[in-house]
Length: 126
Image 1: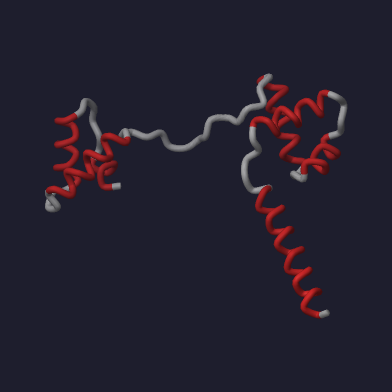
Image 2: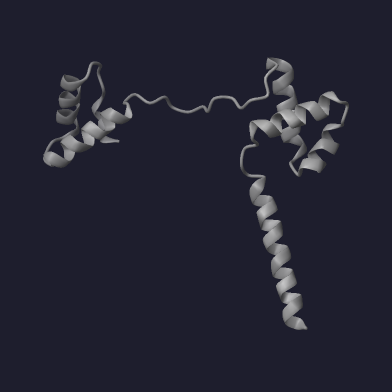
């Protein structure tokens, strides 16, 4: 009897973990449009949040974004823009493996000879 009770508690905790984990990821575009349609139909933000099991602030931010831009899709990710392409990265890696004694400056000069544009030694060393 005690074994069943402990397994039930384990199952409940696993369900709670999976529900909390699902909240950490971004909502899909289909979900965005579903939320927008529910709000346009007159549903309250708190009711929509409760029904979809997300925090109310997520619904609020999505609704404000939609009212501002008339678009519910995710914004492009922010962050530092890449200076080198993946092909440049592969070329640098190949050069560095071929001649292990090259410094970052020497690798930079080899890359600038191969492609157009200037790339700093700090970028190469990273």
